[in-house]
Length: 248
Ligand code: HEC
Ligand code: HEC
Image (tube, rainbow, N blue to C red; front, side):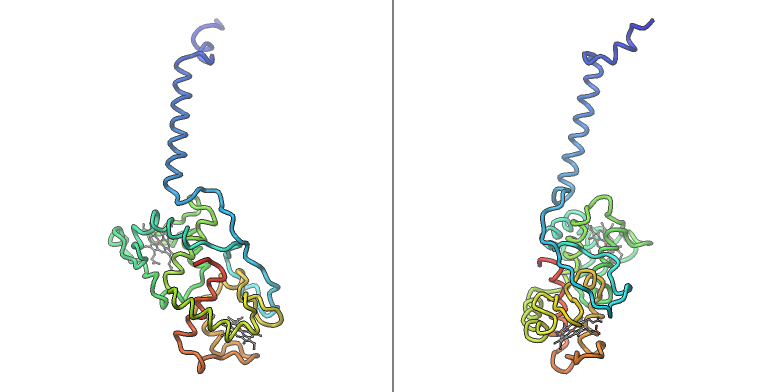
């Protein structure tokens, strides 16, 4: 009764069982290889510099804090690799919204290189779109496939497409001349100056909001550069500010 094939099958010597185990191992290994080649990097976070937090001024209310913010410096280089593998087919190699699949989408992805289209939203919005998707469009969330670090990398890769290297370089100079005296060279100037480089603040600001701030919206200090800096110069400074959060 107790002997026979059914109990014998549990034996490690059973040829059939060993085949199944082998098959299982082969499948598991294939999945590991598949995920390695699918994602740009390994799924373990790479060591990165931590973004410094400041003491936020009391004038910043809870609604000024970004919905999502990075905790470490994002890498545009890693973001570019992920983008090429997962995003370019719809968004286009250069982010112009003209990937091979774009015509089937019903809605054209925006041109990431156009700062007029970017400057309405903060980086936390791009991160939200990449993490959760955009309801009612072909843009699905990547939360289960990319770790947080990879999602910030690709967020700032797409973000950086509207900031040219020349503009960032010019912005760095102008920032040193006009802003560092109060905001500090690292954007974390103390005192009443808002902590520009704090990711909780900066990831939640749109380009338009930052432009407003340097053209008179901050009323209790002399904080209006609209007559001293051209539009392009103001934008350069803003483009430079974002690089407090990512390595271009
Ligand atoms: C199947 C096509 C498709 C793929 C793949 C895709 N997207 Fe999208 N994406 C869209 C569409 C369509 C929209 C909505 C239109 C728009 O807002 O540009 C969108 C919206 C976005 C937005 C929001 C833009 C905004 O300002 O509202 C971001 C950011 C974005 N995608 C980034 C990415 C990244 C990064 C990847 C790869 C990880 C990716 N997308 C993959 C089609 C796609
Ligand atoms: C004279 C000192 C001073 C200089 C120079 C200065 N700022 Fe400020 N800035 C401040 C102070 C003080 C605040 C905080 C005001 C407040 O919270 O009401 C501030 C706030 C800001 C804010 C946040 C606005 C907000 O709505 O919270 C931004 C953005 C900003 N500054 C950008 C800049 C840039 C860019 C420059 C250079 C073009 C610059 N600032 C130069 C003192 C300065």
